[in-house]
Structures are given as structure tokens and as C-alpha cells.
Length: 233
Image 1 (spheres, rainbow, N blue to C red):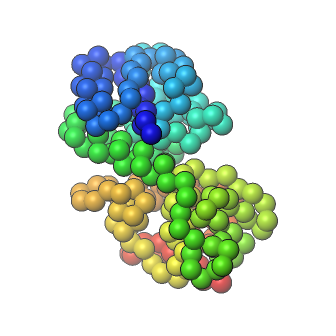
Image 2: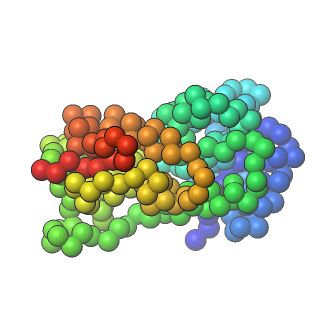
């Protein structure tokens, strides 16, 4: 099955470099120079991942990311934000508007390709192995019920929409209520990233997950100095 990427980047040299290497990794690549062109390309090609520059000539990458998340047809598309801005607040804002990952220029091309591949692989995981403890495979913690097969999540019986990364993070936590997962462990298991990577990414996504869970947000507990866990019933 083809894996598709749209690159939205106004620096032609950077765009060509990424396009060449992503094609070499087996992706079908479409490149755009502006936010408007990029959004049109995403709608036309339905990519797995968008590599999105923050500083575009017609609009900011933040606005493009918001538009992708607001459209049901593109809400589940992976977004890797690529920018020369490296300040912590810029990275956090990018994640808060819906980016799945963030790479600062100048970057190592191989790292970008690996991150795009990891993100595409995560988003392709639509069927998970049912948990052994429940014949139906449904995971239940407090008011939350999560079906690893259908990816349905309900809170007190009401369906709740989660982003793919939010779903994977929640599934990992509720599969073992009470177990504390370190940020490094979550980063490795959910994001498939290892090494010297900012674990602030985990904190931002946990915060977004709690917002999505609404009244069930307190099911996800912070264990200060260690990480996160799902509350035991």
C-alpha cells in the first residue's frame, strides 16, 4: 500500500532535499510552496503525513495545522512541523494546535525521514490486539471504555473522538491501570522515539488527552518525578 506525504515548505532547496529522500524511503511525495497550495494538495491526495513548515509566505503553519484538524477529512493526518523556530514555547504551541511531532532547522534529513516513517506507521495501526482480561477486548477504567479493535472510545456511554496519538497513549495507560509509565517509556512506546528527545512532548499530549477526555480527565494521573498512570478503579 502506498504511503503518501505532502511537503508544505517555501524554501525550494529544503523541499527538494526532503522530497528526494522521502521518495527514496518509498513515499509518494507531493510538494507545495504555500499554505493554500498545501491544503489543496492534502485534500487532493489524502496523505498519511504532512511535513509542514511554520513560516509560509501566505499564512503560518499553525493556521494550516488548525485547518487540517478542523476538517474531518484530514483530522487524522499526521503532521510533522518543520521550522527554524526552536524556542520551547513555539514547539509547545505547534503541538497544542495539533502537530504530532516537531523538528527544528537545521535538521538531519535522515532523522526527518525516520520521524515521518514512524508517524506513518503509527497512523496505519488501526487494529490492535484485544486485551486478554476481557473476552470482548474492551478496556474499562472508571467511566472510560476503549475498544482496541474498533478504536471506539466512550465516556459514560457517550462516544468520544480522539486523535490517533491520543488513542494510543490512552490505550497504553488504561491497559495497565495503576502502573506508572515514565515519560521516556511513553515516548518510546507511543512515539517510537528513543534517545535525546525532549520529553516535554509527552506532557503536552497528556494535557491534550485530558482535554479530550473532559469529565474523565482525572483518570490520567501525574506521578510527580516519575511519569503518568491510569487510576485504578
